Image (cartoon, rainbow, N blue to C red; front, side, top):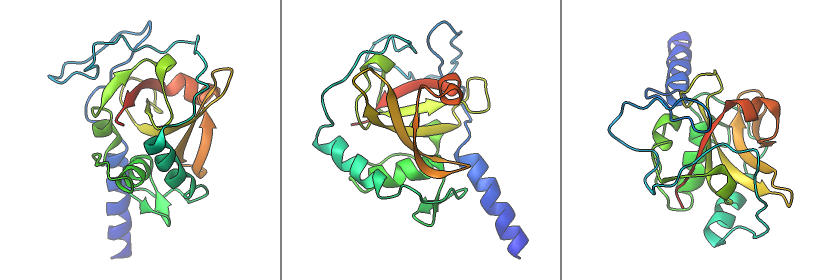
Length: 187
């Protein structure tokens, strides 16, 4: 019985942080999106640009509350399908933190990637969502919350890592830079 429950939990976790729809990729990559919805509902031209501008302003009150709630989970372990301090997966972490601030998001990262409006990485603010294709390709498989934007434009995000649990990472780390797809604003 324990093996069946473990198998069900692993299956759910893989399903919840994977994508069933192709993710939109910006920049000099091809865009593949045969769906009826649009990631970019505000008609901006989001792109992944290395020329990030600095955001010296701090988070607004709602973003500050979200980040405060996210930070209380730093060090929580990764758990496939998890949505509590005893363990989170990436989308469960984002879902939980936003729910604590009365913002309802869908459960799966691929579905979260359809919420809000698309924004250019140069315009991200604290509390915005970053989406990644950690297995390569164009399918959303990971999500994090913009945590810090340094004076020199470095973007750091808080997320549930499969290897380290809830941590803060930099978008400038080679792994995350390569996997980055796009940003969305739901606040």
